[in-house]
Each structure stands twice: as C-alpha cells, then as structure tokens.
Image (cartoon, rainbow, N blue to C red):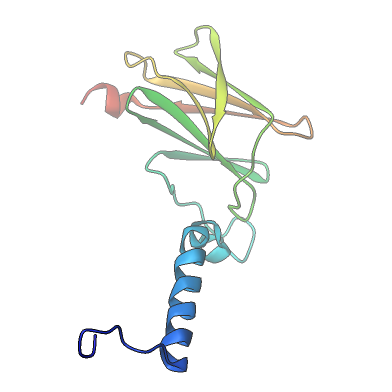
Amino acid sequence: MEGGRPAALTWPRLLAAVAFGGYLAVTPFLRYSSYGHSSIPHGNHAARHGGQLAMIGDHHVELRRADGRVEAFVSDAWRRPVRPRSGRVRFDGGRRAPMQWDSYRMTAADVAASSAVAVTIELNDGTELTADFDFTSLAND
C-alpha cells in the first residue's frame, strides 16, 4: 500500500499473478503425471505404496495392509495405474471376499490374524490376475 491506497496493478504484477494462479491450478494434477512411470516396460519393480509387489504377465499388483484394510494397486507394464473391473481377496485359504474400487485402488476389510493373502483382480478385458502374498513378518510384529 502506498499512502493508505492499494498498489497499482501493473503488467508485471498481473503476469506474475496469472502465472502463480496457473501453477496452483496445475499442482494437484502433477500427482498423475508420467514422471514416476518407467520409459520401458517392466523397468521399475519398486513397491510404490509400502506394500509387496507381484508381476503377473504385463501387469503389476501391489498389495498393502494398513489401518484395517487390504489395498491392491494395479498397474500396467509401464507402471501406469489400471482400473480393474473387480477384485477378490482371500485370507489363509479361506472364503473369498469382494474388493471395492476406492479412488485409485481396490480395497477390502483386513483379517489381521492371517499372514497369507491371495488376490484375484479381473481386468476390463476379462483377464484375471492372481497373486499370493506372505505377510508373516507383519503377523509376528
């Protein structure tokens, strides 16, 4: 403020305000950019969500257990997220329970006493991805 009045709007200030506004508008979408994806198929097999990763054909399934939930993250060969048609989880060879789509992953209630977890993910083309995970070290913690 100059002498109790707001500063005059000048071209540099206007351009700076527009650029900053554009940055703020784009920031939430940077999470979904391709920066985290490999440029070659199967070039990255690191678990991204703190779980265990399985490679099934040209797809990856990461399974994480946290906060009483089992979460399955599905991605293609380049680690781009894939939204499957459906999913099922089975604990210690017991009954299969359906998984629900939640934002960017398949989720189901966790059965904390179990260490062996199997998931079956059905893709939109009908392909089924099945993987077994062993959380023995978590069960003993």
